[in-house]
Length: 91
Image 1 (cartoon, rainbow, N blue to C red):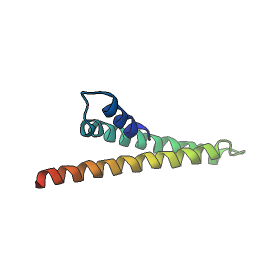
Image 2: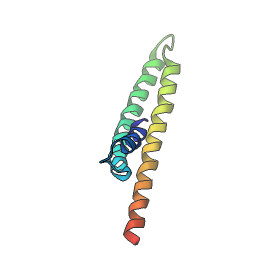
Image 3: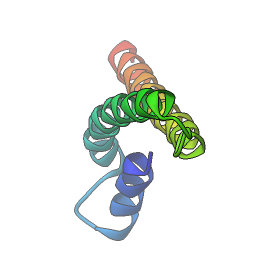
């Protein structure tokens, strides 16, 4: 979930990195990390469902929400970069 904000921070702090270049790296990284987090959250939920005391069910739920939020941010960033590319091409 923090891959895209980290890319934006890198673009602001490093003089040689532009925002578009940082976003072009951060968005795919965020997408892959989001998919990994969704997979881990699913496994945690299945383990909590098989447990007698349902230990960790709340943490699995919070992890699932954060994972889907990160994936949503990555898809939104990809759409933004895609529309920017279309607008630049149409000029």
